[in-house]
Length: 110
Image (cartoon, rainbow, N blue to C red; front, side, top):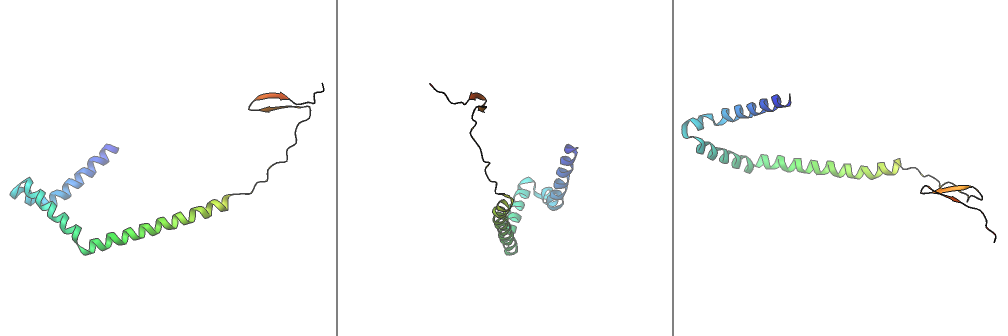
């Protein structure tokens, strides 16, 4: 299924490309198409409206990321709960285990 989608996407791109540059290809060949694509790309890149739109998108994305980064620490602080440490007592004559090593604690007199 993924291959069919890729083929369809490729056909759509090729059809769009042929729609815009097919006549140029028939008249002057591949070199003419390459030159026309470069010219069109340069015109689009230097268009003031395109430059303005790109700058506006860049600013909006930066604002979005700033907002996300500022909200993250607040959420972490809200989710943290203060847990009091348990009150532990040392065993007197009971066995206890540290790292799965059994020990006996009792007073030795001797």
